[in-house]
Length: 103
Image (tube, rainbow, N blue to C red; front, side, top):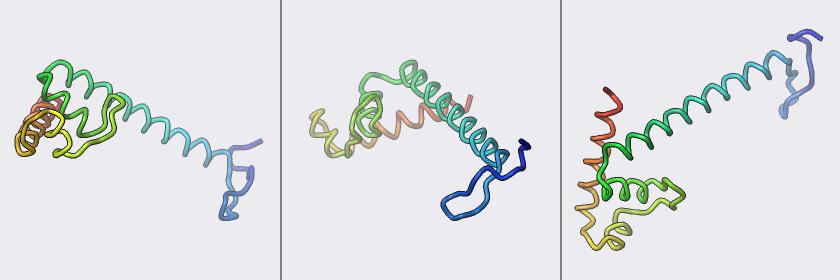
């Protein structure tokens, strides 16, 4: 069997070769590995440079660590602080992470 021989058809009835399948899978795997490495770096940096409150707000806001994403109002109610204070903490934490990752 050659890489450019047809091995079947896709859902739109187009001929698919083994080479096309391998190329698509390789790109997906590379992207997945890249994303997982970036997530791991981000989590590590969150633990290293953020204060507990900053990390908690980002985890709740973006659904990290198994949490369901929450609005700033929901987080404010949970923490007994104003929504605008949650927003300021969130912005500060994101800026800290962005600066750290750029370096």
